[in-house]
Image (tube, rainbow, N blue to C red; front, side, top):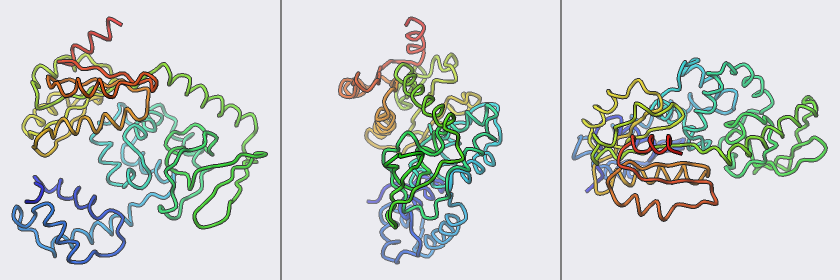
Length: 341
């Protein structure tokens, strides 16, 4: 029996994931395998022609919404969110990333977009746009190599540009030149003659300074098990500061809707609905937490009565990475712990 699809939005998301990156119409057999995997005919009477119609729309949409440069990304970011007074919700940022395929094409995650939005909120958009002129457009997404980026990348102070919008890994620095290696051509040198040496030095210092600060400052994310004593778990959310992200995961749509209505005015609070199933909520929380912990310098708090998170904490706690993992019964507990530190 196929996997359950609960609504049209979920169907479109699965469609994007299943046929990601295609540039021609898949065969009827491939479309049928998608229908079978998600039980679409039995549950929704969706047939091959329906799916192909949606794929055709998706292909046209992808062509029109493909982002090929950091400057284009910045323009679209401001067009989507304007200059907000507060940070948009995680759900809104997630939708933006999905709409422009930024995750799979460039490896961009919510935290990257949040950092750029923080600079826009601080009225630094014009500076960001000016910095983006040092970065070349990227003609084909297939030449992007998601590897470690040399810290002396072209735009030194823009996190997303450093991480995502480089053609390839930068391998050598010599006499003010950066050498790029592509899959399609020999190494090409890019002169930085129009950037004063003093400015480059300042950028370098800024990176070192950021690294130093990251050793002492952790990013704090609280994960709430929405299927486990939610009334007790959510107590204290109103006392969290805007720099603490609160993320609640639910498998019951009604519980999620009630939670969203209660905290819709708090930009640091977001939620996600997963398909019901054995350990579905726990697995989603652990997956999201795992992605954060890989970055290092993370403080992750699990709010749940489930003992499985205690085991996860014991297994994943690694002081050398700068991470800190705690388990509590309510958000109020972690707020009180912060006050007592």
